[in-house]
Image (cartoon, rainbow, N blue to C red):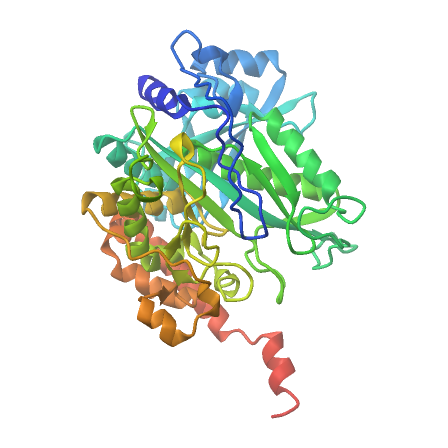
Amino acid sequence: MQQNFFKLQNSLDFPATEGYTDHSSGEDNGVPPRQGEERPFHLTQENLQEKKGDAIMGYSKEDIIRKVKEEDVKFIRMQFTDIFGQLKNVAITASQIEKAVDNQIMIDGSSIEGFVRINESDQYLWPDLDSFVIFPWRPQHGKVARLICDVHNPDGTPFVGDPRGVLQRVLEKARAMGYDTFNVGPEAEFFLFQTDEEGKPTTKTNDEAGYFDLGPLDHGESTRREICLALEDMGYEIEASHHEVAQGQHEIDFKYSDALQCADKIMTFKLAVKTLAQKNGLHATFMPKPIFGINGSGMHTNMSLFRDGKNVFFDENGEKGLSKEAYSFIAGILAHMKGMAAVTNPLVNSYKRLVPGYEAPCYLAWSASNRSALIRIPAARGQATRVELRCPDPACNPYLSLAVCLAAGLDGIEKGMTPPAEITENIFAMTPAIRKRHGIEALPGSLEEALVAMKKDKLVMDTLGQHVSSQYIAGKEAEWDEYRTRVSSWERDKYMINY
């Protein structure tokens, strides 16, 4: 608990009015955030129990047991995430809560893809007590709660294949380098589609809205509002929600937080969106490119490092108000981006979003304002200074994605890397010759290319660890091979008659 308190104290020593959320066009989130009076909240042992925002409660085992009884909770979902970013859970009844908080709930790890072999299958779920929350969309009589868990071996050691543990290890390295907190603000987009008479998803949206439109054009508005209210009930601070560029596309932005808490929130966010959409007869998808010819869904990831409560990316005397550490962090990400791509953009479908013409980045470059660059530096400075990586999509495993992003940035800082010159021109309008003259390389063009680059990047492989990297690559190579050998409707439409 002392370690958790240290983490929370530093992550909350922050101006309350300087958020991360940007609201501009589609994949172009770049308007400076609201500016206001700085009112830092200093967390202490005395007010730890009173801090309710962001679902930080400082719970003890006794608190959890008492709340389960007082709130008439009947089921508790013990949640964890597999290496491919799929949320898993074991549901227990309230009678088992004492066993749960004592780390005695066992799972069969051999049944989880990428975990362990059948002869070493026993694993235990160790709940993060501060993650306890009651699902607001479940019945209020006989409530359902959840605890997010770390996966451990029978001897009590952390399981090396737990994605949450992968991120925790990189965060430990950051702390060893003197950084208190790695703050992250995600901007996850998703589509809402109608379902057919059997409840299966279609690609029909019944939605004529565009960017920032509202009802009656925006038919998903009521579902989006319901999602926001449910998330607020769970401790999220919702900064904005709006219709996106494509028909049926939406975005809900919640306030930045410490990276581990942020990854937890992304997983819960996706669960809430899918659950409440289904409740309203819709299907929500975080698939990066569900429809050809329109914008895909990204998850722009805003990142900043703190030391002693101060944003180390900011230097009022530095070029563009950025510190040497900020420039080295940018350089580290650019140096490792090809090797990271299979993690930040994990699907065959991910690379159909990363093409010119739809505002998604496809070239390795950075800029303070250029929206065609991979990395952008939003205008806000001071405590809100941050690096925005624009290629990740919401299908990624957030624990692994944030782990490789942080590891790459730290590598840049450790080695004193310097990024290439800023690119201010529209990269999409450049010819290949001009891009070559500027030294601008492209992201991998397919999942296959991304996996080849990943295997060549020692930092990425070491960050994930041998277990996760080998299982991840094996699963993704099988996915690519299945896609490669499958005959598509495009092929039939193109070739059936002519040949």
